[in-house]
Length: 603
Image 1 (cartoon, rainbow, N blue to C red):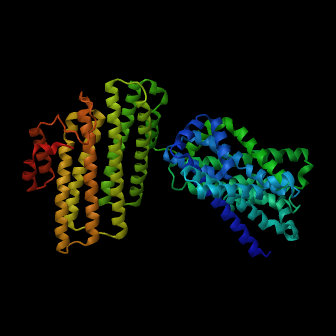
Image 2: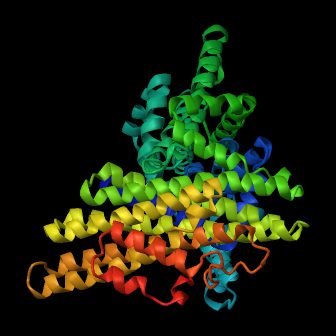
């Protein structure tokens, strides 16, 4: 086999390996479904359980980096805390060594009996057959996903076999044997292990190829040991790349993976080579076999976890020092810490904690609306990214609060507490939708920036008027909820109606500009999209405000989207509406709208 064919075969094996790993991971997520978050939380509430989970998951998907990338996603989305992730990452470093033991089955001598049954090719074939049967003939979705998992496993194993087969001819190459002996130097061996694994993007694949190289008989302990030390550090490359777009906790999780292997490499390199300088070990020239490589790899990884396990709190503190939080981010994390499960047995306390967290959510929604609106006049990519990142945080609030409130509904509560929980569930949904539309405004503005769309002076002036009204609606809503101010809350609904009527008028004016050729179709589409989002933001703000107004009612009906606001007397409502109509200069429309029938006060 020439060098080109060997490289091509090796790369095809890597491709199959990575695809199989991806297929397995996706299948596992689909099988777990909505229970995945609950499972992860229960299985990682102690560091020891986290290590066990990380070991088990990695044994299945055959890649510590893939497990860690998955964990970064969970941490990034708020499903898991950093302390929980550290245990899983440590366990992943143990679990990834299982691949070496599975590949050892391929090197068992004999072509019959137990050796044949336990060979990788036999196991892969059986799993593939079962997987394809489940995938093609099962009517239940969950079985088809299980079939995908099994097919992914078989593809992964075939990819490993392909990689091993690609390097097998090297056993007859004297040049390769001579080159390999150069890496008995510890530093050179460690660097080779790091570079080798960084290219392959998988510690499991690197160990598998090292085992394949061992059959040449040229691989000694002195050469293999430093390469194994470097493999873990090199496997951090895809993990670090996956954390580029993550939040700070996601970046910390990736850093934990790197530090875990880096500390292990430094500790065991220092201990081993320091002891060798004194004791002069005689086994350095021992010829390595696939089984011996699997043993060294497993012992090294397990020993590293044993040494670092007691220092998990210190590691968490260290990575938080390396990747610092802003004061605002520290406040965000503090909010979620208030949702303590032990308080669920005392609904009054739990509801109070929910209120405090919701105040934080309302404050962040208000700020994000302001950020999104500011982009229209002054766009920057950094500010756009911040809006989207904060939208992810708002979604996290809705998820955390929703789950906590649903758990609270299962507890015994009095009528007032039941109403409060029901109201909070409505409010967090509306706040989350306000955040969604703020994010949508930012995306529209980004499109306007990228496509070079420019509005006319009249259009920009009109947008600024309605933006001021939307900004006030968001501010009133957040303040009224935070202070339980029913008087301010009562002003949001008529203001939202002003925004709605104003948006309708501005659409008509823009149609007139389009017909006169003052604006193009691109400007018209973007203009209408912005107005639609403004209208929805104000409508959901009004929904939150109505809930605040009704919060002290004895009426238990919490369907706030269809209930009239009993507290508004028609004259008061029209007065508030008229004052906002005048403030936001909607001109001749004011007289028409002030004379509307009272039923317009309904949501």
